[in-house]
Length: 221
Image (cartoon, rainbow, N blue to C red; front, side, top):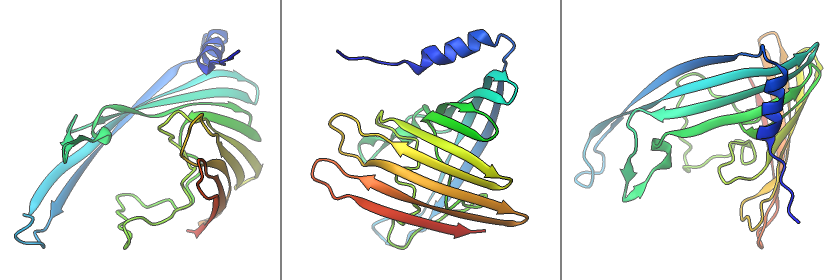
């Protein structure tokens, strides 16, 4: 017997019990202009490309009772160039798609978030910052950070232990027949004045004969 629990039903119930709960919409626009020099002449030519996207967000406080809350968020990404085909293959990043879609409940001390989202960023970049690792990859302790695209479960339990100190434990669960990693991702962020410290690690469980691994991330800003 297969049992399925629908979170949509829970969200609908919360919304029904909070008739005064409203939905707040916001949006932002990003344009990217990329110039590519013709350094490999005559194999490539210099080119200038325009990209970017429009992000539309819907935020809702589904329920609140004193210090307890149930919040949700959905984000839609609309690329400025629409649907594109690159090297004979469709690039999904150029399609209209859902970015965030999550439900969060708890209070000011502890909360739990599940759905499609990104957990705490251990290496946040500045505004309009481009990072080009020398080897083309680079590791930022974000394999299990989130925005899972293949239907696996993703949740994060957060604790606000003290002013400026937050612990978070993320979990990505295996899906039947999955070849992608699952596991735990604990992280901690501490803010005091102008100083921010971040630390965390990933414990990856490989499947179908793969090797287990762990990764560690530390940063200060």
